Image 1 (cartoon, rainbow, N blue to C red):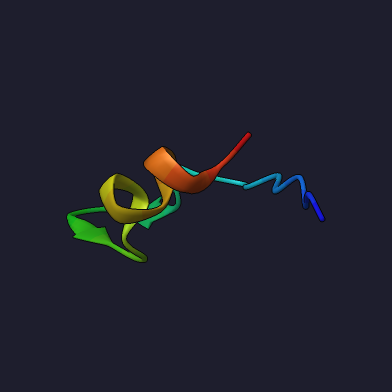
Image 2 (cartoon, rainbow, N blue to C red):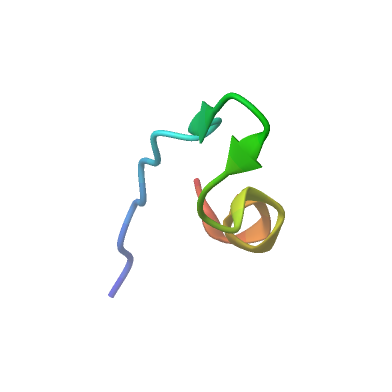
Length: 29
């Protein structure tokens, strides 16, 4: 089985960043 992942990356607010973009990038297709 294959699953394609789509991500909305680059979320931030001022000096604060949210999420772990660098951790999910290797997993998206």
